[in-house]
Image (cartoon, rainbow, N blue to C red; front, side):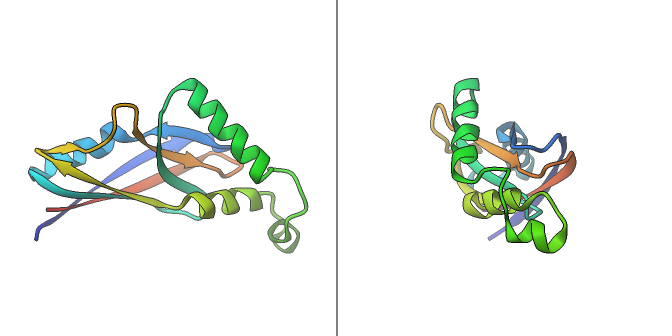
Length: 138
């Protein structure tokens, strides 16, 4: 078994901003030079998540609207009260979605559906620099 790795860094405005990271992850896979294996994508931070979705304007809007209904940004959250903070919703949304995805690759290509992209979602309520760790196991 061989392990390769790479980092993706990006600045985001926060507030549920969604970034397509598929090409960045695919680039790490290509750089690893492996034919078959697994690519694990992990976002560092407690207010950021990684998932897959159809990355297009309607899908993005619907996903953000769903999260607004499930975990509103306004409200009386204990985290905000205890920490004099305003981002409890960001922590909750990130915990529900999760910080990572693992995608197989075959012939050096990520095995994703036609309309499936890997995305990073920054839920914090301020701009951030985000780091994504990509580990390739082959």
